[in-house]
Image (cartoon, rainbow, N blue to C red; front, top):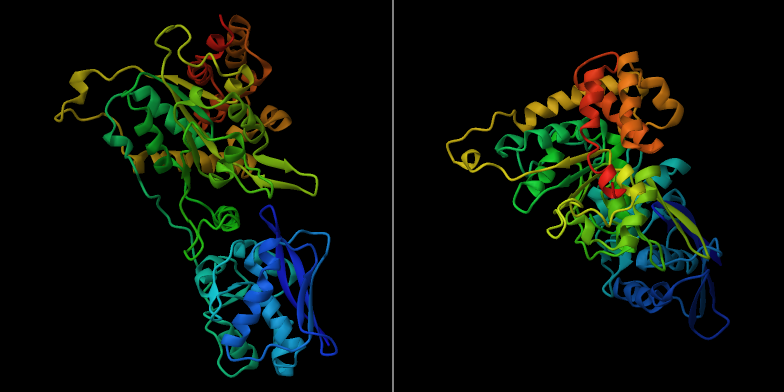
Amino acid sequence: MSTTCTSYVLQGIEAARCVIEADVSHATLPRTTIVGLPDMAVRESSERVRIAIENSGFEYPFGRVTVNLAPADLRKEGPVYDLPIALSILRAAGLLPPEAGGRLDRCLVAGELALDGTLRPVRGVVPLGVLARRCGIRHLILPLENGPEAGLVDAVSVWPARSLRDVVAHLSGTDRLRPVATDQRPESSPGLDVDLGDIKGQESAKRALVIAAAGRHNLLMVGPPGCGKTMLARALPGLLPPMTSEEVLELAQVHSCVGLRSGHAPVTVRPVRAPHHTASAASLVGGGTVPRPGEVSLAHHGVLFLDELPEFTRGALEALREPLQDRMVTVSRVSSTVRFPASFLLVAAANPDRTSPRRRGIDRLSGPLIDRLDLQVELRPVPVRMLRSDHRADVDSSADMRRVVVRAVERAHDRQGTVPNGMLRGEQLDRFARMRPEAEACLIEVLQERELSARAWDSLRRIALTICDLDDSDEIERTHVVEATGYRVFDQAVRGT
């Protein structure tokens, strides 16, 4: 008798439907075979499932048991199929009542089994919830630890269970599981690491932080050690607007695929990732034999801070060019091609080159990479008089500046939708970045004088548009352009002029 149970297979951060078919034949010697392109972890599940079934008080069928994971052309990996395989075998052996089979047909199931039949958490339950909602399936049966994570997806009922026996009792109707509430909301305020008002000096850099937060512009800070680069970077998340429900769900999908939040509620504040400069290109942008998201995807809708930027390998830095431009990472393998979202705000810091101050420590960065860093700020040591404990910084707190940023973001949303100024390209930028004639003339003069690229032309217009929004102005004026050009200080240094 052949029976089925529905689970999922991960492709990047998306989940595809996977049907687990089980057949029990009593006419041959006992043997369990799993087919359908399983990896080693799935093949090993046959013994794990058998012992878990027996230790849960059920009789494992005597005979040849064949389990098929369909579609057969997608590779299946990990222990996620333990629970659906066990339920399919029990159903094929006639150990589940007919009403339990009917309920099972209306569910998506996933979970790893321990030898005693208890359930352990698995990766990718948020994409599973999104798949269920897309397919019109309203019920998920998952391990208890995955409940809060999967509960983020609305319009889906999540039934967390402690063991295989609890799942069978739930499906049979003898002891129903308790569903997880799905009314979680993003937090309204971020977890502040450094408050802008506590940073002394560096007023121009603080202004650059506000512009970066309002327009989602990438930022490069160059200055000597101890001048405050790291503190400024840690203050940036407190200036960003709160995450929307859609952004929280997208980020939760990425984190769920790598098991980052397994057993915990999803992140509802913007993430901050700070990889070490020894990180490889694959760890930054994603990759591996089985493609996994990298740091740029884990920082989706948040901040990626790269300290000591010139110390990263050239390959790692050049790999950032695609996600900085397209806000997406494409990883191609022989068997498949997957895409990971990477809409992050890059904040980079570098020390000056002590042997050649003119080069400022960024001579190893390519021109195309510098062009993608809209805001470029040079920091100098803070005067000692400003470091005294009784000196009060003449700057608003992060909460005050965050309100200014939110107003600028709302103004941009009313004009151009959800696309931030820092991501405007081509025709969109021409349409929304309206400039006064004297402002455009000033910008053209600067580009010709500095011999900047066409990408720098777009970058300066994006910065000027954000400054315009912060000033609550309808058109880009000459003062906005003048301020914007002050944030492109390293273009000529990189070109050797």
